[in-house]
Length: 335
Ligand code: NAD
Ligand code: UFG
Image (spheres, rainbow, N blue to C red):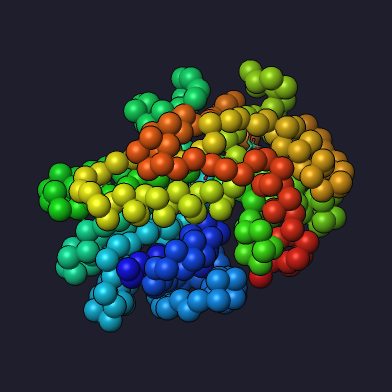
């Protein structure tokens, strides 16, 4: 089966490409390297020993997408391409709305033209806004607290409308919780530009000595130790979830939403301690002001993905720390 992966050179996309190639799929990637490097795709092929077809193009470019669909026998699309930095989305909302929403519209338009109606979409736990309780199930109320989150919410609604208008579509919306870690080879992983926004890449850079100390954003949350609690999940488990979702949409029609999380919450301090234990590295930290818009606790009820997709996370927090660290040590300057 030929699968188009938009944003396949990125952090999650590259790990999904590895799993797709290992499962025998033919993989076609479209990426404009807005937030990634060609090296990631070279390494995906090196890890798997398999060939991957690649187009350097922007998904906003309809003609370029039409060329990709006309030159291949694409049966399904896994759609990662988009911008993802919450803070940046507040500063440059027009770019975020255009890239994420228009990009998805152009993609769906071309998919429809070529009668390809199987889609897996990357959504986020951010669509739950400020949840009233945890663990979070798919039917919980949705809201957004920033432009990035709003793009995910709007795209989810657009996909619902597309399915309502044409019942031939089969769509899986995957709401990721907090993907961390890297492929166990240490060859592909998260390669943030500049100062990392997210916790794990910040921790690995502190451990490398690239940054002096971690700032822990707030210690007065209503959690077991006062620091924010999240559902960290190994990126390879996330990648495997995509294969299960793909399997499902190839056999069915409809639109379904699934949480991809472990169901277990760890605080910032829990993650720091686990990282120190896994790597034998000390992580100096200071407590600073809470980050605007952050919530106290966010973790999934992952039962729907378990029941319907037969998927659940297998790797634990130590695996996540060891693998994130291996990628950082092997790639001190990233790709
Ligand atoms: P990433 O930035 O590493 O990957 C996104 C890829 O899309 C990059 O390779 C980038 O170059 C490409 N891209 C962006 N705009 C494009 C365009 N217009 N045309 C072609 N390519 C384009 O991000 P990621 O962490 O791999 O996330 C993948 C998806 O999952 C995103 O949609 C993101 O919003 C979503 N998501 C990520 C997280 C997370 O914590 N990493 C959590 C929830 C949801
Ligand atoms: N944190 C720190 N210091 C840092 C970075 C983060 O203390 O330097 C804390 C945060 O306050 C939070 C936790 O670590 O309590 C996790 O923060 P991340 O930035 O790693 O992740 P978030 O849960 O804030 O957000 C991530 C993605 C979003 C996505 C969301 C839900 O960045 O895009 O998960 O999936 F929407």
